[in-house]
Length: 339
Ligand code: CP3
Image 1 (tube, rainbow, N blue to C red):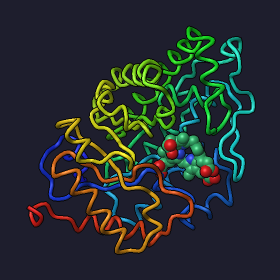
Image 2 (image 1 turned 135 degrees about the vertical axis):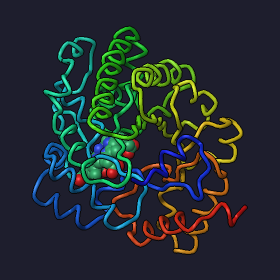
Image 3 (image 1 turned 45 degrees about the vertical axis):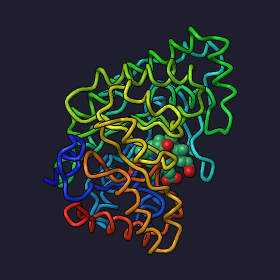
């Protein structure tokens, strides 16, 4: 078993950082499109053999040091009763979003084994054959609440903010419900065999400082308090200005986007391991630039407690050759040589 990821997450000395990419499975791979031609996105998530197959696809091409179970952060809200659709080219959409306090009555507390058994089955299939650690994941309570209220992706969070400004108590009730669901869900993924877990708070950076602490950080901390036994990572996109508060989540490592200089993160966070943070769009540049930027990220992070990743996920049009070059450059790194 390749344990480089787990050693880096314990801040033990390593020769080079482990490397994996958020969204390493997906549409930039032609073999993913072949599977998707036969099944819609939610059908893919809900069919363990196929979800396991697309999880493995990137590992056959690239020598990643970790894998992440193929699934989506919006599967739990669907299990809570919301009607989720993935429209081609438009991303995820809830047809019946939460728009008023009364809508909260429609939400049920799901049982993971009964309502999302496919995720656990996919994990069991994968751990039986993987030679690298498998990440489980979930959306963080704030990001899930924002999706459930907005109904889909958005630039401005007017509905979400209007909801919590008018109805702070009801919004907190929604966060509390999601906190329970997400914690149970992560615990179940660990019991099924995941070696690490990551909480995605993709929209937390849209909040002002006060709301960030109350509605993003505090619920994330309550989730992670209940999730024990494996390294737990927290990813809040666009949260660079709140870097010094992120350790309050209690996470074992923080995933950072490309706006945060990793040498400054190191200075602010001390020994707390970090993951990241190459700008995914650097992969649209020429190979020598890709390789130089990869080295820049590694050097900035320093020799201890760094997992190489992108600052956000791979994009559907990312050139495959750039992914190969970036992974190769990380694997060629040697701290002994750089000394
Ligand atoms: O390889 C992996 O990283 C595992 C798979 C994974 C997916 N979604 C697969 C997916 C993970 C970890 C996610 C998390 C996720 N989903 C997040 C948090 C991370 C982030 O990117 O910020 C969010 C916000 C979502 C919600 C979501 N699901 C969006 C915004 C989209 C893309 C919309 C689009 O079409 O661009 C999805 C769909 C989705 N999730 C796809 C994949 C591979 C594409 C679906 C397809 O095949 O059409």
